[in-house]
Image 1 (cartoon, rainbow, N blue to C red):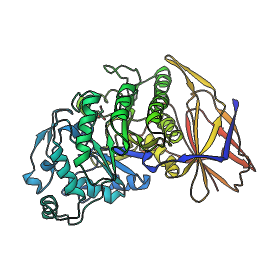
Image 2 (image 1 turned 30 degrees about the horizontal axis):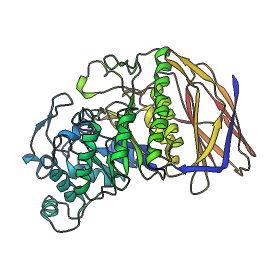
Image 3 (image 1 turned 180 degrees about the vertical axis):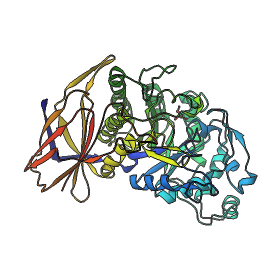
Length: 490
Ligand code: AHR
């Protein structure tokens, strides 16, 4: 066991950690919406107006701040009028990107926005740029958000909703460099400005940003589109265990070498943020434009025997450590990163919940979000930890990752994880001038591929932890291998 020195400087308050960093993403893909969120009012699965009761309760516990919908690639094929009005009259369409299955549109605008109200989160709607029109997008926003008299608001009222909803964020397309129309950055930025002029009703407009660390796309967007025209620039980056899209690696059956390689790859998020922030800074020194990481997470091969177009994968302690690293990175970059949305909320990629029929499990990733939720809207405080480098096939990366914040009541929250599989650490943490009286902690730990399934839903779950001791201005943290710890100081 090694001892690592950590410092927390309470006088060095860095940035607000926007609660939306803990956001989620739900696409019409596989069983995310249908079977995950929505089962319909007539389902034998306990539901509230068609929304799964177990899922609603689990998401409320997480206090999820924002939900992005309807895609993803699906967004640029989505025509909102197909999903309003009596369900029996709604048009059935083919979901071309995701398995070619029939989409019956029984979950549409009303169902999404009512769901956001039910779970108490902000709505983030992506409009169709790739195959839609400016008029279609403008009318959709008017339908959702206007309180005035107009054909759109009359239609909304006819469909049962008198008051407008709040849509805090609107995304102008999705991955328009790829599945959203294969555009180049100059073409997209002109189109963006056209949509920007007519699409009203959201507090913030988010433009399509780079694929991973594509600096040319960001440079073009920052040059062509001003901070008065966009409040956010999105960024998508997935962690692929093997770094090969043809064979991404298994979500459960992987060895220690692949575990380390995956976590080494996930640290690329930090490189991306540094590079992207550097470009944004040159055009927007005042941080008016947020970096919106609205798709992130681990992407593995689908679970054997499942539809390849549904992107269903399991979730292990590896995912928990990976989530912890990324959330700590986002906290550290919260001066520029204003939102992040894990992909995706239920039954797709790195989900917080998995469902099968009437059963539901909380994944290890769910528990990390739960343990991190007190960082939401708190202030990031400077922290530094001596680190130990771990070696993976593709390079080295730090074993320990941490972030520290202080909330409006003065409570301090520290989240820290250890990616090593064979070394525990003693962290000797100095907190000059800290005046805390008590400490409590929770730990999530287990074998690197430990998971929760429908037969063993609580195999990986957080427990109260007494391995953290407060001694005046010092904190001693025993950090076991392959663990995530959340600490509260009052
Ligand atoms: O999350 C799955 C897909 O990944 C999304 O639809 C797309 O935006 C991205 O390529």
